[in-house]
Structures are given as C-alpha cells and as structure tokens.
Length: 453
Image (cartoon, rainbow, N blue to C red; front, side, top):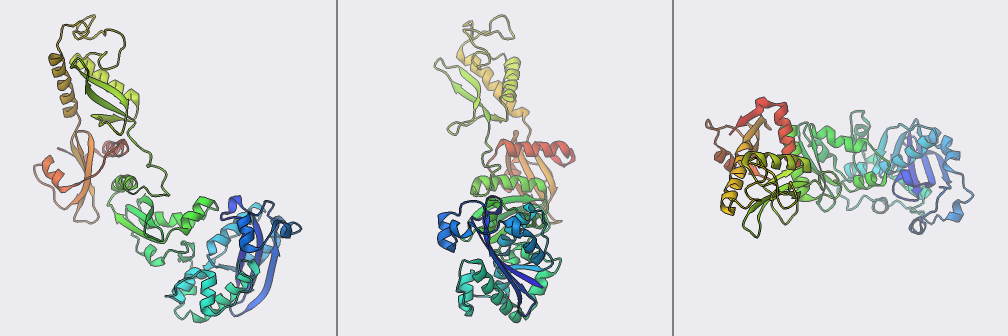
C-alpha cells in the first residue's frame, strides 16, 4: 500500500516552520482507497508570500487543529505504507520532524515521483508537478493546496505504475537501492559512477557551478552520507535542492585528498563550504631595511601586501624561532623587536655591538644574511611517497625548504632523488600552514614514507 502525501508549510525547512495543511491519499497500486486532508494551525504567522502562493491565511487556520492533535491519525495512515510524494524528501522531512516532536517515530520506505518520472517517462522539458501534470493531461483544480496536489500526484503515480515496463519502482524499493535518498535533481547515474576510493568530490548546481568540495577516504560512502542524513534545517534542505550533478577526482590516499580539498576550496570558493575558506597564515617572519641601512627581522601578522620569509600558526612559535636566531648569530634583539628601549643586551656583553655603535650596518647585515641562510638550510626538503590511484603509480607530496611545493603521481622514481627533477614532474600549488601541518603530521606518523632530498 502507498500513502501519497502533499503538505503546505510556512517555509522551506522543518525545524523553524510549521505545517498549514496535510493531504494523504491511500493507494493500493490500482486506485485511491482512502482520503484524508486537514488544515493545521501552525502556531506561527503565515508569511505573506506563502499566503499569496497557497491562499491559506492566518484566519483560515485559526480554528484548525494543531499538528499534535492530528499527529496520531497522520502516523496511523503513514507508518505501514510506502511514502510517496513529489520531491519526497521535502514532505518526508517535515512530517517526520513534526511527528517526532509529537512522540511518533516515522520510518518508512519512500518513492519520489520526480525521480520516477525522469526514469519512466524520460525526455520531458520539466518534471515540476504543474508542468509534468499538464504534459500528461492531468487536471489540478487546486494547485498549491495539499488536497489538489495530492490528488494530482496520485493520478500521476497511477500512470507511472502503468508505464513502468522496466521495473524502476520495484528497483527503487529494493532495500539496497539508494535512489530515494538522493536529491531530487541529481541523476542516479552520477552517484553510480562514484568510486570507493580516496579522493575529492564536487557538487554542481543547475548551471554547472561548483557549490561544494569535499574529501573522503571512500568517495561513494562519504557522498551518500550527505543525503542519508536528511536534516530538517534550512541550510541542508536548500543545499540538497541545489545539487544537480557530481564530479570527482581520485587521489590515491587520504593525505592527497586533504591537500587537494584545501587547494580546490581556495581556488573555487564554493558557496556551501565553510571550513578552510578562512584559513590563512596567522603570523610571518619579515625582513626589511631601516633608514640607517640595518636589516631588521620582525614577527607580525600576515598581510596580503607582504611576503613573509616563513609563516607560523602562533606568534609564540615565531618569537621562539627569532630568539634562537638572535642567540646563535648575535643579532640585535632591539632591531628584531624582541626588546624595547634604546639598547639591548646580547650574547657578547652587557650591550650589543649595534646598540653601542661599534658595528656598521654592513657587518651586521652579513650576520642577518647568515642567519637566514642557516634557517633555509635547516628546513628540510623531502618527498612523501605513498600509494597511487593504481598499482603502477605512486603519490608524491613535495616539501622544499620546509614549505609545501606540490603533488603528483609518478610511475617511477629517479635513483638520485634530484630535487630539481621532482619540481619539473610535480604540479605546484599555493601553500599555507594548514597544508604544511598536514604534511608534517603525516611524515611524523609514517617516517618510512619519507624520501629526503
């Protein structure tokens, strides 16, 4: 038995909106056997644009029952039936949310007449309820009212049952089928193409624009988790409605997927990604020359107009590095902004040679250059080598002087481990502290995968 459902609501997501009307048609696979419909007092104001669309006003529902008063009847009609609706996840999410609040747990199989229509009657210009029914000659005298739309959907479902020569409805009801959990505008063929491998995936809207980038150890399972968790919130419901296609890129390992997710979010700036968008270098080590010709090192917040010599997550990390350079190369702590006042005290006595006027800028600058050269040499260049996308290749992540350089896939590695050769073979990408920390953390966990260069 099928329960064909349509509802009217005060808005587009269940956890902040109410139901104003419910209509249910019980269908035995041949015809309608029972009808139920009622207005519902949502307990909140009906927005003016909803009133204009549905014709349901605050005055009309003033004497109507609350949802809790009819929840037992609605649950009794639905709980042992197959739930059918046009864009089923919308109606299902609302009724499940409000039934749960009333103490009833709805768990039924679902069928979506939008998705079934695309499979059973392919090639139509539109599968919206109004245009779909017009194309099939189904008259709906009460459009955007629950009773009219439920009646039209029931007639449409009867036609789909009669036209389903290839068994799409039976396939959709198979316990292994994920068809009815997919967003209404997403072709199942897109989902079926997804591999069970590490990588990144892209959700596209109706214009092909990327609206979300994600990473996964298992692309297919991760993508399905977006759809199986049918959260009733506005953000999730709008997100699902806007997914029209999925593409993907296999990455071989989770580390490669994490890196490429970060790179692609910064490149594409998808509207539904929140994390990683704002991840920037927090602090940097800067070099500049003052009016007296002395080279000065400073730790400061990263700024788009300046290029740091090195970056840090925390200011303490930067100050500790700078203090090490001061001690090892007898740099002036005042010129490095570590100490304030007219003079500083360094390793070679009570007052450093710069502050006492005993050292020219040329001699001091040479020590600064030596410190920076030592810093550069102390930062390692290495390759992380791991599994690739096939048994023939290896994934490679390249770090040069402590900075992320890029990634790629190679079938063979040279015997001499030439840094310059790897630079020509791998694709460079923009670096940030997030990616650098990913690589260093992975290298610490898996030292056997490091190839020093």
